[in-house]
Length: 73
Image 1 (cartoon, rainbow, N blue to C red):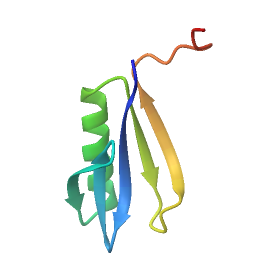
Image 2 (image 1 turned 180 degrees about the horizontal axis):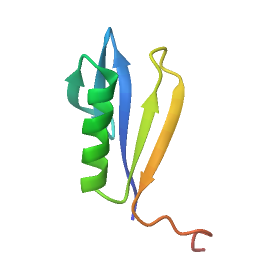
Image 3 (image 1 turned 90 degrees about the vertical axis):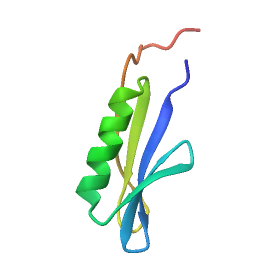
Image 4 (image 1 turned 180 degrees about the vertical axis):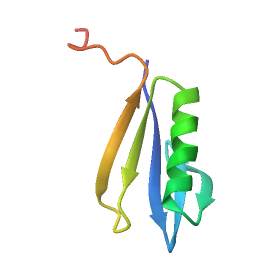
């Protein structure tokens, strides 16, 4: 089963949360966007939350749900 990817990204001076490229919400504070993204990802497992810095570069990611290692196949 494929993971749903949630992202917290800068948008002007604000922050947006997207799911698979579709904008879900916007926030003035990054912490609020991360909280929303985390709640959404936890409710939609298997999923991943990818957080960016203000300049758009990668900061960190969290994986929720079963993540078998090694992968089958």
